[in-house]
Image (tube, rainbow, N blue to C red):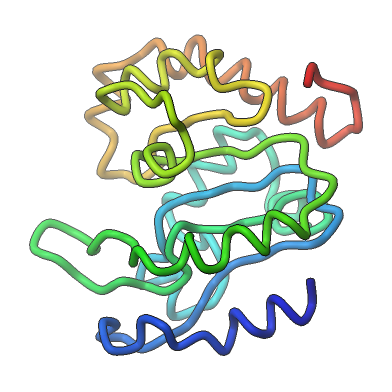
Length: 195
């Protein structure tokens, strides 16, 4: 795993497309129990090299009901975005994650993660890539999260840009989050969850 992470750190596959240069930001350990797959680092994460080190990360930790120490404990949680480098700015926000990362690096990473109990897919890029039976919309996919268990748990992106979505879909915080928090706590405490 150490050599693989070093190889990823030196990756320049997307360099010609990255206006801010390469800086792969991820975190993983062979003992990780939960993997979080998001989109790609934002500019704050790019500049600090700390995954989910922004407002989205604060909300995600709140959703998971875990503190920073737990979140950044690699033996508990692996953080593997769809694109490892900041993709740059687009007209309406950050550009989509580069498509080169996941096919090249996810298979060897997940081969090395032998103790995973759960993969959390955040947002439509991760869900459409990993779910063969994703619904037509992210809302439908998240609403039907039980269909993807025990391997995957699906979430919307915790970005402040999604505040309107959260207001429109109050069921998410009332119904989905309690399940998510309970499920995550069981895994982190080593309680067997249905496989």
